[in-house]
Amino acid sequence: MIPLTLSEVASVTGGSHTGADDRVGAVVTDSRAVTEGALFAAFGGAHVDGHDYVAAALEAGAAGALVSRPVAGVDPRALVQVDDVAAALGRLARHALAELRRRRAEEDPDHPLRVVAVTGSYGKTTTKDLLASLLAPLGEVVAPPGSFNNEIGLPLTVLRATETTAALVLEMGADRIGNLTYLTSIAPPDVAVVLAVGRAHLGEFGGIDNVARAKSELVAGLAEGGTAVLNADDPRVAAMARVAAGREVLTFSRAAGTRADVRAEDVDLDEAGHPRFRLVTTRGSAPVNLALVGEHHVGNALAAAAVADHLGVGLDVVAGALASAGAASPHRMAVTDRADGIRVIDDAYNANPDSVRAALRALDRLAAGRRRIAVLGEMLELGDDSETEHAALGAEVAADLLITVGAAATPLARAARLGGTEVVETPDTAGARAVLDAHLRAGDVVLIKASNGTGLWRLADDLVAGADRARGESA
Image (cartoon, rainbow, N blue to C red):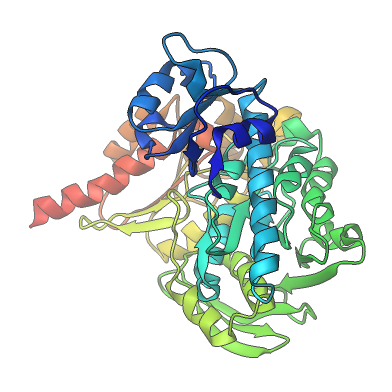
């Protein structure tokens, strides 16, 4: 971030500060991650309150702390007190980014700082990771680790940008209308990418049309002169072109015969499940062999390629980057072949009906005649549609063995069993692990998929760790 004094932080955030006017050059929320001269943001929480760690942060070298109340035993002159730490963090990030843009416009107008934002019901993190690789030729790229896509994670990412940053890649998530309006008020994107409108967070949104409305806020929040990159294969996303209000709109598509600006032709998969296709843009075409696994990643790759192409990255460079950019964030279609002959497909980070269907298609392809085992947990935040959506998904499961986890997955299990699939229902992750211990054998391919809040990713971690144990036993 741009260096600021504590009094400047107070001015920007609407807080109060009296005392030494030390300068801060970074913001952290974990006292264990404090660097010399950092500003420690103390967030309250149900289980952990950051105010309890202010003293430790200052002792570790923090220049000050952003707090919402006085802290006993801490010199108040080291504190910037605000009404709401999250809101203050957003104001600080908004100011820092605006100032960075102003300085770049004055000092190097031919190379402005580009802000690229990605949203969608699924694929956000993978596309964000791809963009971080594809935009590297432009210079320094700042992108969030994992899924820092909310009112805390996004400002923290914005505040990592410096005067040498060429591209700031942001993931923007929403679980209610208004989320993206707020996030784009902090970081108005020069390029806004909308991947898909799916059945995620239906309980909070109250219907898929409201999901579309929420995602369109990213397009509405474009910076002046910005560009929207839209998925032409999703009618609800394609319709967002009207929200662009005269700004440039680019489309991407993997559908045959499409006239999208960026498209994939002759799509197929190699034996390991890596998509191959010809990337076609208005500038030419190039063959692509994705390092990612699963045909559903073609759309994510096209979205990232559209942005890179728009920002001037050469087509051959884009194709080469797509061939080397594997899964950079954990639990997202990560495939591990264990020494004992078991293949683990870890896609356990999150789940909604569309992403689970994509994962099941990948399981079918990656098994290629081997026994297919699907371990599926609950898809959270579907609201009143939960039972219907789980049952509809269960009717489509074509695995040789389905292991469901949790009571909420009962409709899925029931529908799959009616369809002829062998099903074992388990109450929790430990139960699923016990079933796998009893059933897994060499040659099996097992998929782990559920919403992050179920904790099923721990089972995936355990199975992948088993790859190292198996190697040790066979050595």
